Length: 375
Image 1: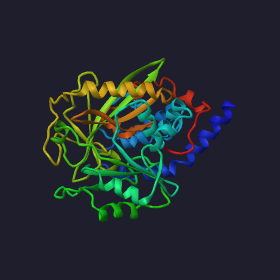
Image 2: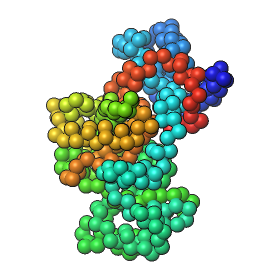
Image 3: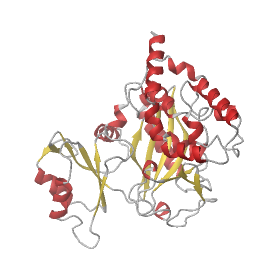
């Protein structure tokens, strides 16, 4: 049976190379045009070694610029960078087992966070299968749903597809700050009428972030991406970074051209460099000029403790990526990711194979746990 699983995964990996060629098209173009590449024989040898080690084509070699002459990493250090296929099809599925839906379904995530009394944004209503429901799952009319919007004092509302990853399909609606009624009847009708009626949604009030984070970038709620592990009844934080918006964006999502900065999980001190992705860094936020050099977030302990507490409640997932905001009322969970974004983590932290305890990648090729799609 193990051999069958292995063959199935090998075939899947080969079929998905076209997908990753498209995913990494920008990096591949840079690689082909680069004038500072190592000798061809060195590149071939290193890529072959990484392919043998991980069992899949080493797109990470190109993604993280290991082909450049300025890259001084040894082959053992290169092995620390986890390839996307391995992470999303083999590694994470083994640890969240059959519980991935807990993070993929935003309604289910909300209900579980609510049942565990974990802080999160207020749910105004849910739209499912053509019907509206309040935050207690009671069916309401479209008129009532419109009224709920009009009675809200939130400065922003987020309409999110119930099933969605990477910020896809999220619509941000802003209140009129000059009006006593933040959302009038016309605005509430627009929110409802512009929904794709074939899609399920949740509508949540936006949070107002703490002034510490507002100084970094005020147009989006900048969130902490905290990676946790739950093992043998205990949880711990493995990695953390701050995700920030830029250029007027109302979202902080790194996959949507956001920015990230590594955080020391023990002290809450930020790294001096901000990562834009694709190996590009800056030492200050491009919009506000905020510099992280020597900056320590004063409420980091509270953020870390909330992530560890949540990881215990969602123990079956094993590894989780928690998006946590910080407001004047404290830390609040925005979202859970059972397969957190790998590329920006490795941009910030370098290779994280050892952090996740991956000793022998070959073991995962014969595991019965396997994802049929990228998470």
